[in-house]
Image (cartoon, rainbow, N blue to C red; front, side, top):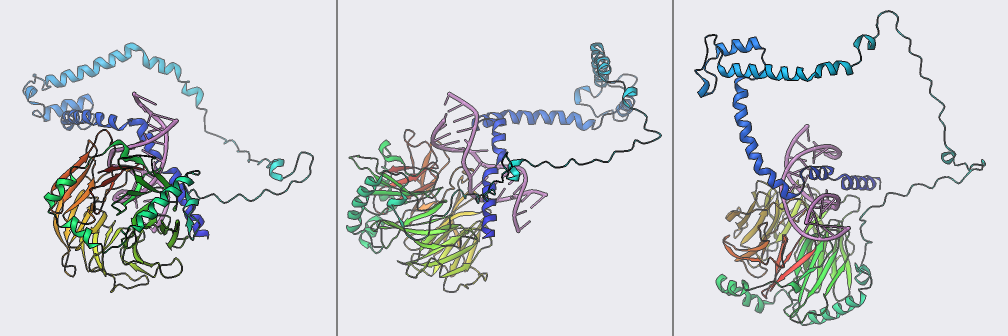
Amino acid sequence: MSTTRSTRAKRTLNRTDGDGNTSLKRKRSGKGDAIKEEKIPLQEVESNQQTTCTVIKKEPTILTDQQQVVKAQTEPTSQSSDEEDLHDEDGISTYEKRRLKNIKDNADFFSSLGISEMKNELKPSTAKLKASSRGLKKEKAPRVPLPRRISLRLLRVDPSGNSLPPVPLLPEPLEEHPRKPSGPLEMRKSLLKEGSLEDHNDLMAKLKGLVQKGTNSKEDSSKKTTASTRTTEQFMKGFSKMRLVAERVAKVVPNRVFSLDIHPSEDRVLVVAGDKWGAVGLWDVPGREHLTDGVLTYTPHSRPVNCLRFSPWNSSHLYSNSYDGTLRVGDLQKEIFDEVYATSEDDYNLLKNFDFLSASSLLVSQQDGTVALVDRRTKGVEAEHEYNLHFKSLRTVSVHPVHTHIFATASNDGTVSLWDHRKLKVGGKKNDPISCVQHAKGVSSAYFSPLTGKYILATSMDNKISVFDSSAPEKSLTTFKSFKHDNHVGRWLTGFRASWHPRREDLFVVGSMKRPRQIEVYSNTCEDLATFYDPDNLGSVCSLNAIHPTRNILVGANSSGRLHVFM
DNA sequence: ATGGTATGGATCC
DNA sequence: TGGATCCCCTACCA
């Protein structure tokens, strides 16, 4: 418990002192634009410095006049070209003469101002100030501390001398974002806005109909083929026609989006987003008839919801995991957020991402470099196993779509690694990957291509997006294609995670820093296929994006909780 | 209109 | 090893 408290204290401290510098710096340098303006004259300054430097190089130290004369005599060729040969009979260059004259003129000017006299007037005479220190030393009187006076308040005595009840113990500092109570949470009770209960009931009624129509099977092969038999060109012909309109932009969660998904239903467009402070927002995107705004926000978590996905086996199950250390499943039929997995509350192991292993089990990547195997069928919220994989924090975990015993991890240590979970040791022992590729900086995400797992798509902080060839997972991973992409989003935005079309292996989508703000679509060979932008309706960076599995729908999420639906 | 503000992660020491 | 410091440089909102 004491550890918990100290960690909490640290956390609070971190948060409050944060980056005190930032505000200071900002005050000094003004807005972002102002910094850019400053950068241009900086180059001029540099070049100026260079010219002054050449002069300084010749005379690195301040010399007395005499020394300078000597120096000038011994180094006759050290001056700049046009003054090289201009020496008089006494060996002093005209340049040097002019310089000495300037020094003298300046000195004359300052003395004419009478500054030194004024300085002397202001200064008390040193003779008066400094008494002789010779002879007897003054004996220092020992310092007698005054008796400490304690207020009546601290003595817990009232003015008439009656004793007061003792001070109640200080309440433990409240954690700013405590974990939600464990166990199932009713959706209606975790609504962000009270009073939206009717809207909640309406939406749930609609969604029940939606799920019964049967889009809840992973093996829905008919749809899979309609989406994936078309060539890239054929597909892009329709896909690139998508547009954004004002009605399809909405704030779905109050803060920065950390996770995003889109429901596979073909009848209704339902997008979901998880945010920084544990909110999960559902948005029933209006079709041609736009009635209400259709946004409902719940708070099943208390810290960033870094991964949020509808189960491929049951689309009414919305899984979410969070930095608060819990993984929940929102059941849209039972209207609860059930707790599936929770780390020990003492060690604050942040849950980063998860992927589905089977209808009931998942792999969860964690901050401490471990991957947890979680099964819903077992009682309790503990993991079945924990595999120790990396020294540094993990980001994403991705299960091979065909060989489900193989999974890939992306880590802060710059690696994308393949693992065989049948061969992993449990209980803290360090494991070795089947194979691994190293990036220069941390890797934000690495996902298997959704149908065959032949490729791994990775986004990394060394400004690259890579497609690795993982068609022979028992052999080493090789780079299939890779290209430069500005992945530096800065401090306030969620990092990019390029993501596949959920039913195609020939294209993926990624956010962009480019202006106008845009969402980019690339082929698996890293060729630019399309760019979606709309200056009227999209004015911010969409860090996360998702594509509908069977319809031409693209949703982009920005860092203030807004979703933009192109369709 | 515009400046205040939020506050993650890598790296340094 | 972990606290301090630096760095990235947006979007919203009062």
